[in-house]
Length: 160
Image 1 (cartoon, helix red, strand yellow):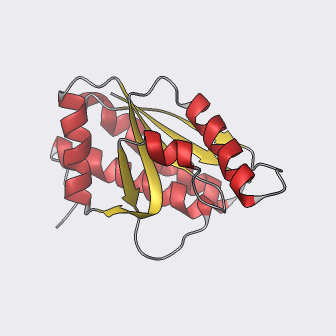
Image 2 (cartoon, rainbow, N blue to C red):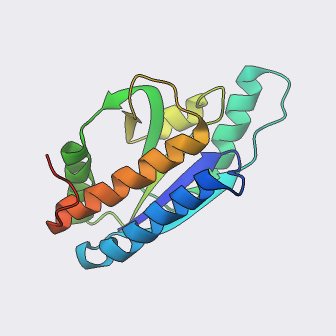
């Protein structure tokens, strides 16, 4: 199953980008044996629309366009369901075993997700109750994807 991260905003070169690349590289290598392919991170620019509602709608439209091939869309949302690492791994396993070809993770902009993203999401997940900068959200998500893959493969990285 192909995993794609789509996010509003661009991550600048530096430590955040390096750490994101590290976890993605680990996930790519560990994912092959368990049928998980971390394909890419797609970044879209923040909307310049004058109102919050219009910015969210514009970003939602572009996020959905970027992940149009994914049947499973997971919106990262502060009001989403918080799950542990093992439950997250199980979620990935269930979709992989169901034959889903692609899963997209959608990270919204500073104003959050537009209605179109929330309405089309298969699942809404929260990374926790604290607000995270968008760059850090990508890193946490990439690490959790890597951790889920290691859980599925029986690798000792995850120690409950």
